Image (cartoon, rainbow, N blue to C red; front, side):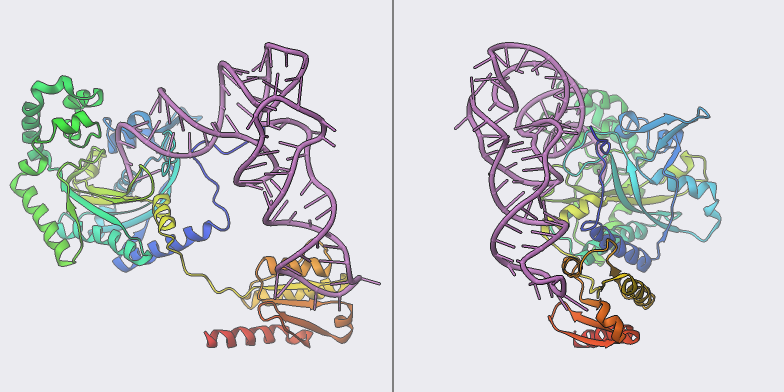
Length: 426
RNA sequence: GUGGAUGUGGCGAAGUGGUUAACGCACCGGAUUGUGGCUCCGGCACUCGUGGGUUCAAGUCCCAUCAUUCACCCCA
């Protein structure tokens, strides 16, 4: 049997790749408008980075990493997310000595060994942004605004922003105690996962999807109820700023994100109509992370969004992307000498930034014309023996169906004129 | 890791045990020996996912296996 692509990966080819270009272009523009600069980091890193950065209790580290030993017996992992990498790069390159905060964004493939389903892949793409060195709640509001503004520009509708505060090391202890005593008597009724969470990371029991667990946590203390003064003020201010920007959001006290490094603000964006995996973006504040991986104490916040999922929502809405008006030219030449002339002409057109193609298979005129139609060429330039003898070419407007003759050396000028004219009409 | 669904030519899709496995689209060629989009004609299946089994006979039944897909967990 022929070799096929690994499970959970995809080939993106013409017809679809244009949608990626569309999304990527908007992402770059929004980031640029907000003053974020692109960072590119390695696709693989030391396994230890993710173990420490993402957290040992997470599913990502426990069961989803692509980890292998390289020939030097180093444990290497294909990045499952990029926040840890960005923080590593920040520390390693001493970006903390540059003007703060450092505002970065990235796009690229991530890898997680999971079973696939709608909206879930083993190699998928994320766009994300991170702000390092800024602890003001205004930073939180700005970064959420980046997300919202992108969605506004690409016309994404039907999404909800959920926010929450999961507290900080100061107030987590109290929450943990109160949650423990609340659930103490009913631990046995929790699902298996939550029974182990009870000791390791009880907070996450709150957003367990198991029905029994949801029932048991109906009146359970949320992190919001136990926020320390600092966290509470921070959360209030984030909301205040979001309101100033007239950004709609919902407070979801039970949203506790799966990664260990989050504290204070956490947020998630949900979409409908793309299957069970409805989270299109997630993020939060991670003030202890940079220190955790060996850097100076540095506040940080960021998000990541799944580009496949964004495209899925756009597809669902049938929201398009602008058609690029591309004036393609196909040069149809017959006979060796004409083909040589045509080849030169094709090059000239391309040098003038006109998309031009020529038959490469030595086909007959009919086939070449048919091909010109198939590739939706606006103009066909026909050069045969007769034209060659008269040093002319036929220029056929494929859309209007009429054609004229012009001197061989003025073909380029003629087509440029035509293009200019029709652009003025539009 | 767990559960369900599916697996016929490039794509979509008939086929409910029995001659050379429909059809549509796409692709290639021809009908005007130099001109597209419509029409007509023709071309394009050495594994019906793979391997076993049942049967005189299997794409059609059974088993296994692989793949795809949806869902659970979790996440983007």
